[in-house]
Length: 615
Image (cartoon, rainbow, N blue to C red; front, side, top):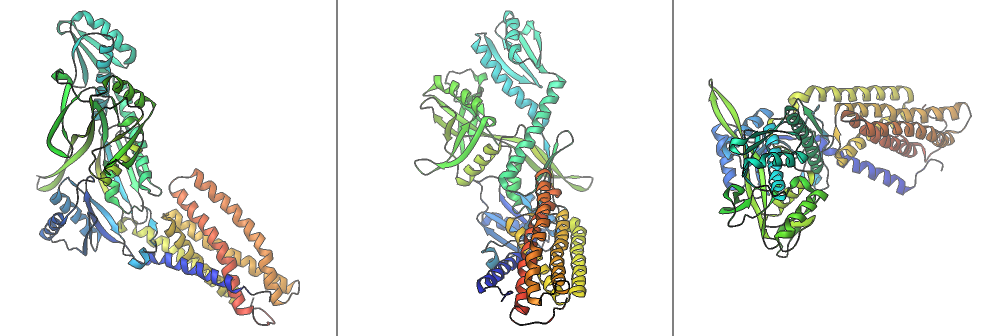
């Protein structure tokens, strides 16, 4: 017969529809507002002790918990509404302290059997429901101080190289003060330093043998702009490492950065990675007879009570790391394999070549914020105090000249090594950043957009169904079944690919529904033409109608698909969301409008002789 699919083709179409239904099902299970607690770094674990503290803190404030679970050193607490979630976050942060990251989250309620198959719901954008908004502030003063610190180290090296005797180089009140051995050396020192440090303004005090270097206002502004721009690049790299779809990372004002993570699942990890201002400094261990002014003492990060003295001069920093990966040493302990860029490799080689046999320390630096609560005018106010932690993670003997590739050992565990490698690979922050504001965009803000978006789909679907049933009758039923299948498959694809659905994305779905039924209109109109104008039998008309309409449908969808690709390649944010749903919708509509409707026609008319079709 002309209109019969072989058994394997019917089974294949039904299998595709069944898979689509399975992967679309998770969208019927709404997420729970939740709070997630993890350690601020890999070495800090969440245990039963923190669980009991959390329960006591919530009980003292009469905050009911829907469910509580401790798994893989992560504490997840579920609540019934967003108000309980926000109150719980504040209570837990105050009770557990700064060693733990307390972050808002949305916990999935998808059944285990669906999760075991990799099925998950569609990620909704910030304009609908889901995602986290961070407002971060760049510490401009720290950016300038960091630049002065690098310049001070360079000044010491230059003066030693030129054999100009000096007593000390210090940083005081935003200025570099170089105290020479005698006033006769001031002019020569200034001449030598101006060659490489021409952005500084120089003043001399001959009575104190003092040469002072200060930055001009223009130079300070350039350093601050560079710090914000570099932090923007680093944060984008870190977001990419997290695998967040359609993120927004942009500057806001002079010293602030906005980060929006739509559809993010693990906000605790996002907050820990984005907020970590970790960097490394490589320094030589100080000699026993070293000048006390040229030495700094630091504790070991994971060995309380143990300290070591390192030289103030830096060999290089984490800013010169080109790549970092996790590995294991000969004792199966975690290590971080470092590859420096050209400048870093050259500095490392120059420093280690004459110092084989001495020890080199790796200093780990973290800029954090200490949160406390005070009463002001009868109200409870949150107070944030920035502070810096410095600790040695490795102190090893230099066995031979080091180049651009080497390894860091002595790191706590695999998770901590992975986080350190991620931060170094994504790039070090040019200046510390602090969380000024954190909020989850939930149902309270996106509810109207969700309702209107769903209503637009329902109205569009209803109008299309009414038209098809009234105009094409039985063939209209086939088209409506295919249309519903198309919607299910489109949602399934968005879910399986982890795409983020925004309001423009919903517009793409509505447009897809209209274009999908347009293909069936072309097919049905062609079948009618073959019957009433060319006099073909119903069976031949069905076969010819599908065959001849296919090329027209394909051409129309290809041109639209090309436009969607252009939109995706040059667009940003919501425009990309629209392009994604439109592109996927074109693929699903081609399948349902042709294969699914043809299968239904075959089932009803393919096995019997018919005199006329209800068209």
